[in-house]
Length: 156
Image (cartoon, rainbow, N blue to C red; front, side, top):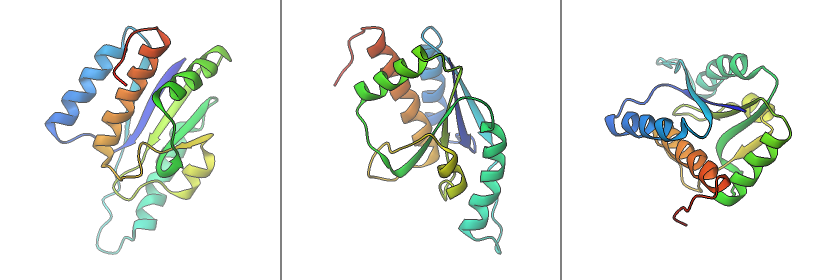
């Protein structure tokens, strides 16, 4: 199963880029994971947050319009534990799923069209995080889930 993380924008902070590289390296032996950056809408003076989300959604929807499952990250989504994520990943993998996409919005979040297209809307926390931190956190959770699947110890 190929996992892609579709994220609006690219990590700009050095710590985020280093963290992403760190988890991608550790995941390389466990899973095929790719981070795909979608252009962040600049949203000039006359652009509303809704307009920005719609423009970004058009690009996201083109990317995820393939067979597979889509998990959108949103603060209002379902909250699950790391072992539960590991179980879902295992079930999807065993079902023969070829592609799993996690989608992270930009500063204004995800448009409703993306949330509606998702098979699962997942929350990392009740708190709101930047897309850079969300990317780093979902990579860490994917790594943790594959470690759990492999029977490796992990910190609870």
